Length: 188
Image 1 (tube, rainbow, N blue to C red):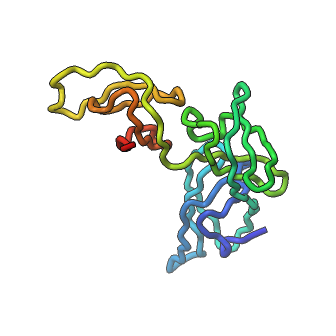
Image 2 (image 1 turned 135 degrees about the horizontal axis):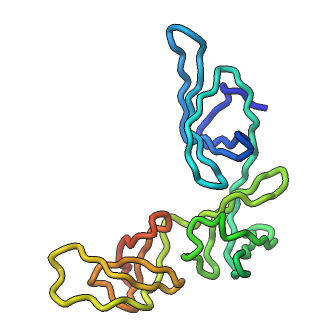
Image 3 (image 1 turned 90 degrees about the vertical axis):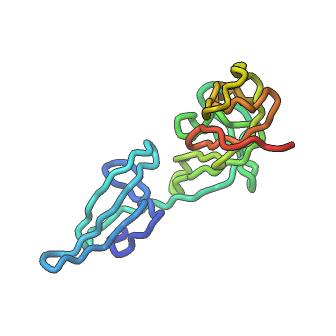
C-alpha cells in the first residue's frame, strides 16, 4: 500500500475497480482545513481521463506495471500474436487493447504494458509514427492546389488515411498512429 505522499507521475493504482495511471498531481495545503492531493487519472483499459481529489495520507493500492518490447508476428481473428524480444515467448493480445491495430506490420516492434502480478497484458502501444506505402489513392482534381485539399487513400497495412494531392500511389508516407493523420512524404 502506498499513501498520497508516494504519488508520482506514471504511477499506476487500483481505483474504482480499474487500473489508472497518474497523469498529473498537485499537493494542496490550504490556509484553512486539511491538505489534499488533486490528481488527473487515465484508465489503462479504456483510456478515459478523470480528475479525483485524495485527502492527505489516504492509502492507495499501487499496481506494478512493466513495459516490455515485443515484435508483432501475425493476426488470429480478433487477436494478435506477439513475441517477446528477450525470451522469445509468444503471447496473444486482444485487438481492443492495441492503440492502432490497422497500422500493424509483420516484424514491427511495440511496447506492451503487463501487470507484474499475473502477467496480464494491459495495453499495446505502436511507435508514435509509422512509414507505410500508398497502395491506392483517389485521383486528385488537376489544378486544385490553392487550398490544403486532402483525398482518401489506402496504405500497405489496409488502413485508410487522408493525404494531400501531391502524394501518389507507390509513395511512402509517415503517419501519426495516435491521430491516424498524414505527417509527411518519406524520400526513398
